[in-house]
Amino acid sequence: MTLTTLSTLAGLAAALSLAAWLGGAEGTGVLTGFLAGAAVTGACLVRQRRVLRARPDRALRSMVEGFLAKLVAVVAVVLVFVVFRPLREVADLRTFFLAFAGSMLLLLFTGTFDNAQILRERRAE
Image (cartoon, rainbow, N blue to C red; front, side, top):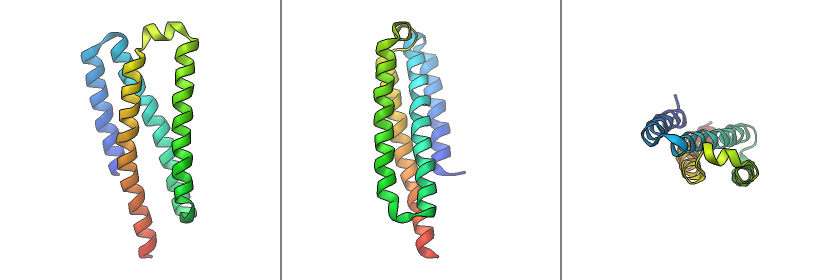
């Protein structure tokens, strides 16, 4: 099990605990924010690992593409919250974005560490 997987599970447990403690729209915002951030970052990390194994010379490009994908996801979520008013009553926007940013940072640091190990293994070959 990689460090990324362990940190995702630990972060999910923390998000579930915080969501249960907060309750209501704030709790729903925390849980959905963590899940959305983890999904976007996880997808970017999977793509980056695939690029690192196939074409390690494109590592920086895949990191920039991942950053842009996260930026697009944030803009899309803001638009969804603006367009669908009932959603704002179900999930709090502030707690959503705090959890979204927290999960992205958590997975970014651990995923970068795991990806660096992939590059070290390739150089050792």
